[in-house]
Image 1 (tube, rainbow, N blue to C red):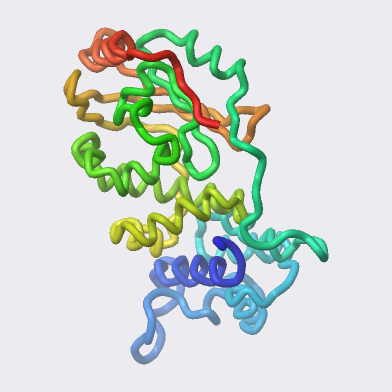
Image 2 (tube, one colour):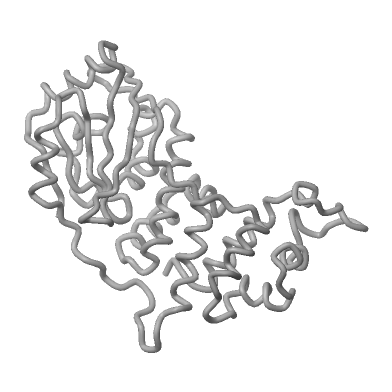
Length: 291
C-alpha cells in the first residue's frame, strides 16, 4: 500500500528536513538541532496552524484535512507544484466516504485505443513515440519508439515497464550515458503517479519489486522527491545507430487521462535525426501494444 499515514508522514518529514531554517527567515535557534531542517513547531508557525494540529497531519491522524490547511503547509515547506499535487493526492484516502475502498484495488484495464495506435503508425519516421500507462508500463509504441532504447518487442510483456527496465535491466546503464539523471527522472514520475493512483495494484507491484531488487531505487525513493519530468533532452547510446541526442515531450491523452504519449525528436538534418529514421526503417514489426 503506497498511501496513508506512513506515506504522508514520510513525505512531510523529508520535505521539512530538506529546508534550511535561514531560507525561510528563521534563526538557527538556540542550542544544537537534533534533526536537520525545520522542527514541527516551526512548520506550524509558518503555516499559521497549531503545533498539535500540524503534528496530527504529519502523523496521518487528522481526518479530512482542508485544502486551505494543505495549501498553508505547502507554502511553509516551499513545495513545488508537483509536490503540492502529490500532497493533495496522498491526502485523498482520508477524504473517502465511509465504506470506500482502501488498499491496492484494481483500476481500469490498461488498453490503448485504436485511434492512438493509428496516430503512432502515422507519425513521421523521424519521430519515436511510446504510450505509457499507470506505473510507467509501456503500452504501445511506433517503430522507432520500440527500438530507441531497449527492443520492446523482444521483451517479456510483464517487463515492458520504464522503471523496471531502468533499474533492473543491466543494459540500461549502457543505453543511458546519464543513467543517474534518467533514474531520478523515473523515480519522480513514478512517485507522482503513485500520488494520482495510490491504490493501483500495478504501481504497488512495480514499487515493491524495485524496493526489493534495487538499492539505488530504495535510496532515491526514500528521498521522497516528486518531480514529474514531462519534457527535456536526453542522450541515448544505441548499439546499432550510435549515440543520439533527442528532445522529448509528454502529452496526457484527454480521453485516457491515465495514459501519456511521449515523443522523441532530434534537430532536423542532425545525425540523431538520421539515427531515428534508421531505427524506424530497421524495425521488423509494426507498432505493438500490451494490454
